Length: 141
Image (cartoon, rainbow, N blue to C red):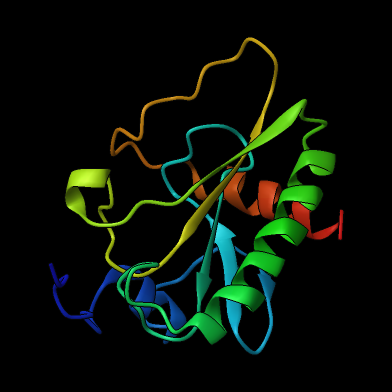
């Protein structure tokens, strides 16, 4: 079964083009990491490749290696920044698997023992909180 085509107007593509602002945590030639505006825990970051791909099923394998390297780098920094006990890393492929933005991305979520994830409910976090959390993570690289 073939997945649908990549939509160049998805929200992450618009962030990559600078059409929508984001609280950036990390950026290099291939990857961008920024705060999730509906965080499931403090320090919830999204890591996306700059190359357009709908998800891991259609991604160029050459994109995945550098992307995973940044996911690891961000996870280490986020765990340190939030003095977390662990880090959840999630990646979804197609709507039935939970994907809602169709641009390949990884969720990096610092976790504390006994604290459940908040629902990804549609309630946006205050921009000042996101900016502060992004700065904490940037300072941990």
